[in-house]
Each structure stands twice: as structure tokens, then as C-alpha cells.
Amino acid sequence: EPEVTQTPSHQVTQMGQEVILRCVPISNHLYFYWYRQILGQKVEFLVSFYNNEISEKSEIFDDQFSVERPDGSNFTLKIRSTKLEDSAMYFCASSEQAGLSYNEQFFGPGTRLTVL
Amino acid sequence: RKEVEQDPGPFNVPEGATVAFNCTYSNSASQSFFWYRQDCRKEPKLLMSVYSSGNEDGRFTAQLNRASQYISLLIRDSKLSDSATYLCVVANYGQNFVFGPGTRLSVLP
Image 1 (tube, rainbow over the protein chains, first blue to last red):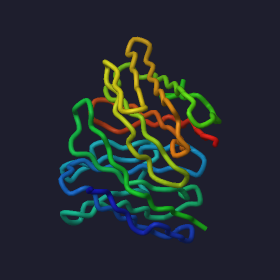
Image 2: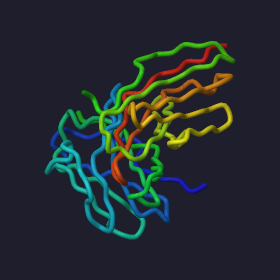
Image 3: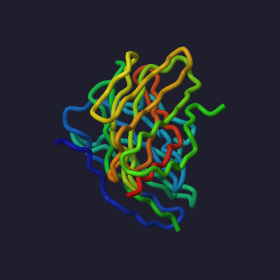
Image 4: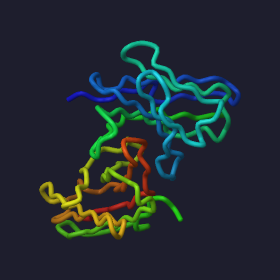
């Protein structure tokens, strides 16, 4: 069964460093998303991406964040200068389509980011 | 008012029990509704989409009331493996998911 994959599973970094989280969405999916979940809190939307551009982003997704689809398979989230409060689980998700009523999103296993 | 609200939980039930989860959402323009389950420190996994007419998948039944902006999930004959956090998810037309805080379920032997 096709699945979303993410690397690394755990990333530890120093405050102020740049990190890149990587995702490989399901191959025939066209819509890609990043979410985050701070420990003990709910899952929060960061950004959605379609046709090589951001289609929607939340207030969390400020200038420190960027996304890219550098090739036909990878989808990355970059945090330029990490802060302590960026520590969270980051989930990538993809969906086959959007704009319809039942656009299920499939989630990757997540990258746990720890900022020291 | 929070966008998606759920029963605070946790629910502790014996095996074989029937358990119901409730969810309300604030955005009347919401178009898509789902239940996901999340095991500890794992990703959300789709349990079922929720259709206007209600839908059933084995022991699981989901209902949607658009007028009341209310969604429910019923689990019958609960199993130990049903222990997880159940997430109510709402989406506007084709866009990002809005997650509820989740309700934790523990099924006890």
C-alpha cells in the first residue's frame, strides 16, 4: 500500500540553526501539506502546496518557514533559524485531489524536531 | 469559540462496550468531515470520512448534522486495539484540515 515517508524520524538541532525536513508524498498525489503537533497539543496546519506553489498557509508559517518541491518526488520544509518553540512533531501529508468533498489526506510518520 | 471542539475525555471503557464521541465545529462553510485515530507519538490515520447521510464501517458509525454543526462517532463492541486518541477533523472546500484536540479512549480488559 502506498504511503507517505518522512526523514529523518528525529532531528536534534541548536537554536538558531537551519533544518530541512523531508517528505516523499504518495506518487500520484497532487496536493501536499505540512502540519505540526507540539507535545500534548492538537495537530495544527502549517501550509498546503499545489502545482509548485503555496496555496494556503497559517499564521504559524511565518518568514522563517519555506517549502519546496525540488524534484518530482520530494517535498521539503525548511526552518531558517530554529527557536525553542519550534520543537514539535512535524507531519507531512498528501492527497490525491482537493476541492471536492472527500479529499482524504494521508499522513507520514512524522519528524520529531527537538531544538536545544 | 474554538473551531473544532471534542469531548475532553479520557474515556475508560471495558472491552465490548459501546462508546460515543461528539464533535462540534464553528465554521458553517465546512465541507469535509473525517474521523482520524492517533496512537501515542504516531501519525493520524484515517478512520473514516463522514457523509451527510451517515455511514457505517463494521463496528464504527459516523453521523453528521450540518444544521447543528455536529459530528459523532460510535464504536460498538470495543476492542483493546481501539485504544487511541480519536481526532475530529473538518475541512473547508478542498483545503487544509482543522483538527479537534482529540478524545483519548482506553479500552480495558
